[in-house]
Length: 168
Image (cartoon, rainbow, N blue to C red):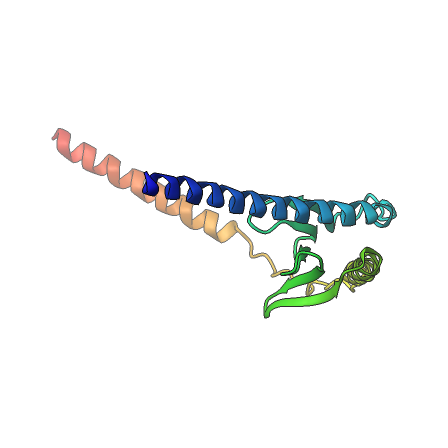
């Protein structure tokens, strides 16, 4: 009887811990949604033809607010601090950290502005002109035709000769 009660109590405690973890994750997602709503005016100003940014919240083990393919915002260990990070080929760098939504909006605004300038520079870059193509002079195809005609005539003559020798 005592073991059964202990198992029941342990199951209830495990369920409570799981519920707390789910509540923490829901709280993280809610805080990221608040930040996403605060970023709506910024993303409303980006021209439609610019497709660099793809904002959205991914809900996995660690919920993230994606700004573009390489930058996202994740909640810190205390679940109250926003951490804006960017993945680079040398590892992940922290762009900004703050408890304040307004400070994170400013950091994301600066990041978006830098990315738009990088895009403009990439589009304005001078195009590489291909080297000029030097045409090789064409050779006359007459001698090739004459040689082919001569070889064809000799082949037909040889075939007729072999056929006439067979009939004898």
